[in-house]
Amino acid sequence: MRCRCCRRNTYVTAGTIFQDSHLPLRLWFRAMWLLTNQKIGMSALGLKRALSLGSYGTAWTCLHKLRRAMVRPGRDALSGKVEVDETLVGGREKGSGGRHIGKKSLVIIAAEVRGHGTGRIRIQHIPDASKEHLMAFIQESIVPGSVVITDGLPVYMNVTKLGYIHRTRVPKKGREEASKLMPRIHHAASLLKRWLLGVHHGSFSKLQLTSYLDEFAFRFNRRRSVDRGQLFYRLAQQAVAIEATTLDEIKHGA
Image 1 (cartoon, rainbow, N blue to C red):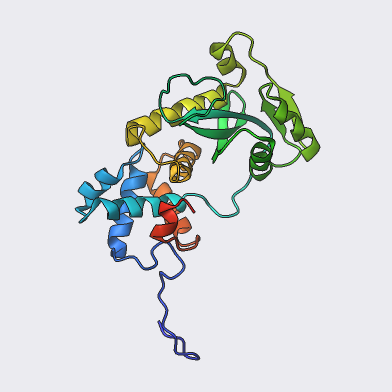
Image 2 (cartoon, rainbow, N blue to C red; image 1 turned 45 degrees about the vertical axis):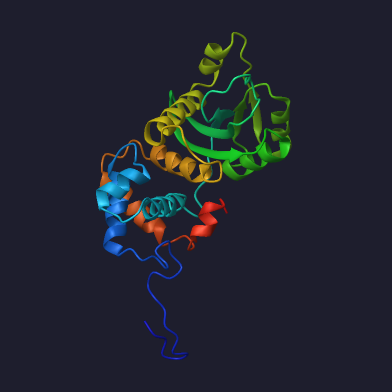
């Protein structure tokens, strides 16, 4: 399209994830359908084969751009009663335990309590379990005034200063007891690890981990949707609502 005033050319895909892409929109839509139509998602190698793409890199870039579109700008924060805890992802490592990160990645999860079940979740990769990162995640993810349920980590005591009601549940009999005290968090964490292992074989870069977590949250929060077409429609909506992303930004986790 050309502006009548300044005579500048522009395109309908400008400012979306499709900007500067050499792939036809029809291929993008096919990729979006394949990604949302499969319950657990798909790998870049699987997308390359399904769409007969010329290179693995093209499929990888396409999937990562779509994953970035899975987070809706201005989405509603969690509310009511919310369980919050951290978990480590990245496979087994000798000498690790507790909150020792090592070569693994630390992930914080917040899950809404909805009766005996789980509502929506928020999930984020954080460098460490410091006050700065934990409190920032809670403020971004949970509506003030909500009940925040955590374990006995002292740093969580600061949530009351931020306008939340704090409840602690301290495990006494190891991991089995902890899973009973905060079942929603442990269920979400277990599904996340199985998903990373099943779809991506447990292999991922820390720089792109945020994109994988976004996809997992997108799928988990829409797990009860019986119409897969609605997931495609939602992803298509959000694909034109976010800003364009370059390959360099994706590679560096920007």
